[in-house]
Image (cartoon, rainbow, N blue to C red):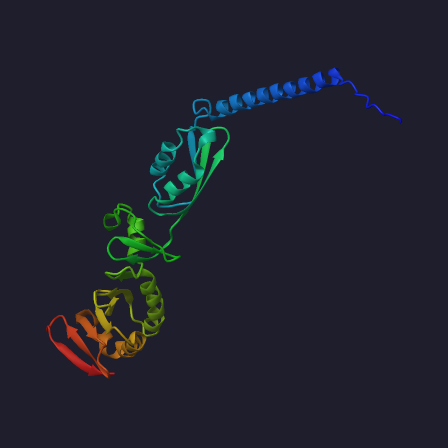
Length: 265
């Protein structure tokens, strides 16, 4: 009977020591690298080493207070250049009066750049608001007492829209529908008023009021445009109010007599 014996191969102690040594050396190097990276990160995050010293404001802005804007940005810049909350600063700037959009970025090594896009007003809303070209409602402070005569004159030329409800979009669209109709009859439209019952009146230059009511607004406006030149224009300065809610006519109140005259169109 033949017998076989397995021969054990001795473990190479040198290879084992080399492997362990390599692993330990790699761990030490990795640890040192992480330590250096953390030290470098702490260095760059130290606000005292990379403070913000200036704010650069860019863009086409005419009404925004640059000093107020810089004050708001610098109040958020105490964290230093690398710790800036860019999104937070952007949101804060966009809440300022007249600002529609703001784009904020870092400028190495010590500045923040803010590019502004302002609201462009296309109409006045009630006593203290403005409507922008993209139908946003915004409320700059001191709108009723403007110290800038150029801005005051510019805003005074805008259509005046008024409603107790937040219907500025619908009112502005209605104005754009009504204005061409009245322009064809050379009627000087200044604005539109909606009351608590959603009854609509047209406000003409000089304060003359034209009541068109709740329904058939465009048709009643067309009827007024047709009668304006013959019935209203000759006595325009004396007319207080014209009521177009009558089916086939109108009623006109005069300032001088405090009486109402009726007519057919």
